[in-house]
Image 1 (tube, helix red, strand yellow):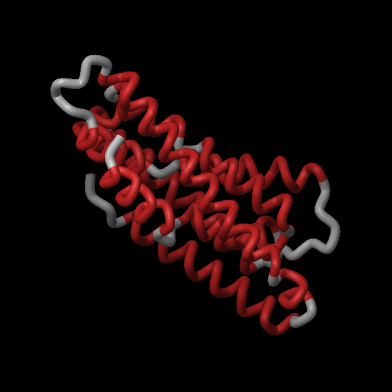
Image 2 (tube, rainbow, N blue to C red):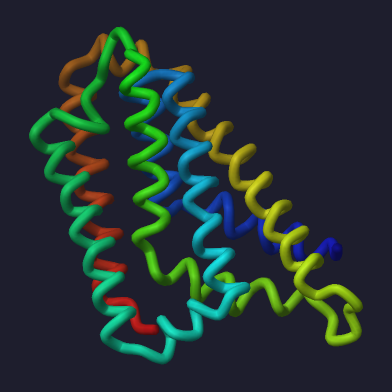
Length: 203
């Protein structure tokens, strides 16, 4: 494992994206426990893309315009749904003073869906992982799985950090309804922007 892989992975993980946005939103709206659940869900949502990249499904998405576009627009629709939920002051961005067990499960499921419904992740891993596997590697599959595990662990740790930070300022948000309103609108706008970015993404 190279230092270059660790640095590149860290930069990718900390960069703001849909998973980071959702984890922050969950921390602000539901607290620390739910934010950790969201971080866990986002991490688990990476698994299918890694499996797809290693198994070659990403190549199919890359080659088939119909498969890629279909998968992509399902993801776009889901991001727009999250934006609509935020504007309605319901769902993932509704600040709850008491977090139920069902809320934690919902945070995990939503986070998993957010990452699964992004076909760019499969293609990203198809292009990213092989760069750090030597042609002389005796067991390339094992090495790719190791790198994938490290990437996922890094994702979980960083996302938990984002979520706990958001949860730490949660009480201040709850105490200021006007700030809460603008926060919801900001997150809704961000989900729409990410959906638009995904909609116009090429293979």
